[in-house]
Length: 86
Image 1: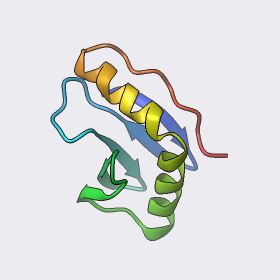
Image 2: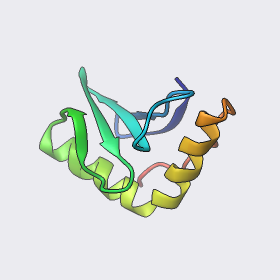
Image 3: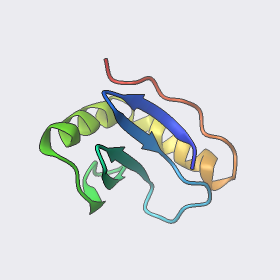
């Protein structure tokens, strides 16, 4: 599971050869969530409201890069790192 970004203790990963819809995995303080890249909605799990807000803000800034990273991982290529939220 390649890590593509990390900020404020939040870890963003994309799995190799994962299933549709395009999504990414988030871990923070023992919580986990899966976020749909298209809708930026939680499709599995959950996060504290503050952490989720930061993740959605970051994802909205990098949505095209997230789609590209998901496609790379589908092809079993290491996805490129994405700038963290600052």
